[in-house]
Image (cartoon, rainbow, N blue to C red; front, side, top):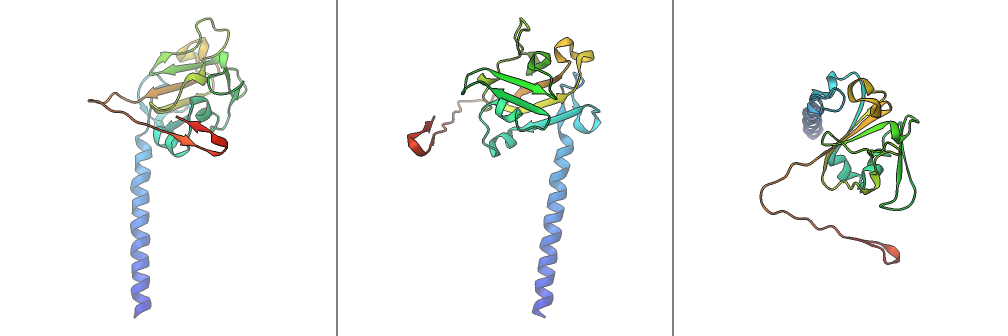
Length: 178
């Protein structure tokens, strides 16, 4: 009799966790992307190769800069020439950052002269809501700057009232990050 009760409890837990997982997977269909077509579309309806990094993923992976977040996506490499604040070079599928359009809330962030890409090293992820990456040519929609792809950084919306946050980190060899 005890085996039947244990088996029924285990089955109930399995069904409950399975239905909870299904309800969470439905939220993935609600992801909208605006950089692929210049209009808000569900990620399911876009035929371009799109990757979306949410703010939850950025917090879970302890990412500090946009370049560091982009470096975690397959087909993208970010080469840093020094520490934080130094110049980064972005490559999507081998195409240099001169041919990759960087947008922040839909506004072009690329260097106006076009000699190099956007300065990604200065962009921290503290106020980033999500990062959309469209791999491949998008020059038909966005112009010649987007012949290698698009990186659209969407920031968090402003909240009412006064808000603040403090983050400190300490490590070995007397290292600190504030």
